[in-house]
Structure formats: structure tokens, C-alpha cells
Image 1 (cartoon, one colour):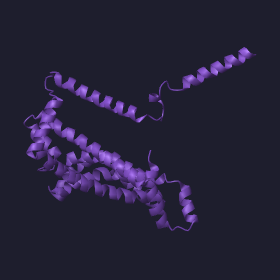
Image 2: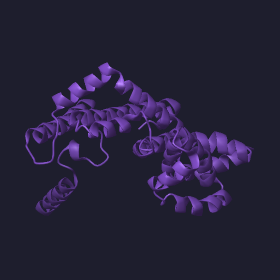
Image 3: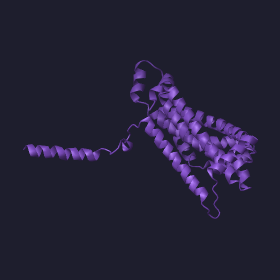
Image 4: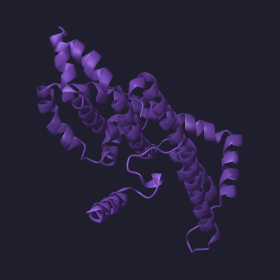
Length: 281
């Protein structure tokens, strides 16, 4: 009997052991120490740089990859000439205006769609249709309607992101616990108060995450927008140096895109944690 009980415990122990991950690094939704996270991040960056060095050292017909040293040299020259900051200012202004308008519409309409059934029924079908129309295909119409100044560029950024912002913010608003809404009505809150002080405030972390995710689409639309006869901008700089086969400068601008994206992401993460400390991961 004792042997049978002991064997059963060992078998259960082996089954449970097989169910546990062999290392905290593979744990599902587990926690990593800060040092381990930093080490893994550095390892990932080192792998990218190593792949970059390997690609730049190979001689492939028709494919030229500048080395990291050549790319940083080109970046320094852009900085010293002042071209980098002029291009960054022009592109950053377009993103700031266009994406701010897109998020403002997304927050207002998304919260209403996620909270009021009649608003959702009214707007869901047309927004669902419009989000499948490629914004880049509207470029000729933007030129005919708005000319070649800043208006069509900002409008393309808005159109390319607003429908996704609206639908994703609506999903965030729908995720507000119904118990909170019912408790607010029980305590005498009016409909407008529930929208602004319960639904909106509870949705702030999710809305900031929506802004983080779709900002990448905003930068994508910026590249399309700057092809509309723009004189300055990051994408314009790439097109100009393409004619001279300036691979190092092109890579330098791509590096700037990545760095600006990372800084924007970190800023939005800080905003989320600062505006809703109760929702920190």
C-alpha cells in the first residue's frame, strides 16, 4: 500500500513537472527581473547590429548596404548641415497636426460608439467601409481638391488613421465594467457624468495604448503624404538622395524614423502611467 501511494505521488509529481516551464524565461505571463529584461534587450539589439554588419560586408550585385559607421557619418553630416533638423521639423509638424486631429475624433466618436448603442449602429457600417479604402489611393483626389500645400498632407494622415482609432477606442470603451456604470446611475449620476467621469476616465490607459499602436500608421501615411510635392521632410530627403544613390544617407533617415518612433512610444507610455497610475502594468 505504501509503495502504491509513493508511486502515485511520484507519477503526479512528474506530470506536474512536465506542466511547469523549465525556466522563468519561458513562463507564460510571468515576471522577469529588471536585469534579465535589460540583458535580453541588449542581446536583441546586438543581434540586429550583427546582422547589419554581416549584410554590409557582403558584396551582392545590385544590393548595397552601408555599414553602421557609414550610416552614422551620414547622420552627423545631416546634423551639421542643418538639413536633418529642417526635415524633422517639417515631418514632425505634419504628424503633430494630422495625428492630433485623428485622435481627437477617435476619442470623441469612439467613446460614444462604445457607450451608446444608437451611435454605434449609425457609424459602425460607414466607418467599417471606409477603413478598407486605402488612404494612399486618395492621393490624386487630395491634390485635386486641396492643392499641393500642407492641407492634403495633413488630411491624408488623418484619413489613414482616424477610422482605426475610432474602432479601437470604441472597443476600449466597451470594456468598461458594467458594474461601474450601474453603480453610478444608482448613486444618481446623469448620463453625461457617466460618460465623462466613468467611461472616459476608465478608458484613458486603453486610449493611450491605441495612440501608441496607430502612431506607426501615422508615420507610414506621412511618407505617402510627403510625396505630394513637399519641399522638406524626412521622406523628401530620402527621395532626393535616391537620385544620387546615397545609401548611407537613406539608412540614416531610416534610423531617425526608428529613433523618433521609440521616443514617441516612451513618451506615450509615460503619459499613460502618469494619467492613470492605477492601471500601470
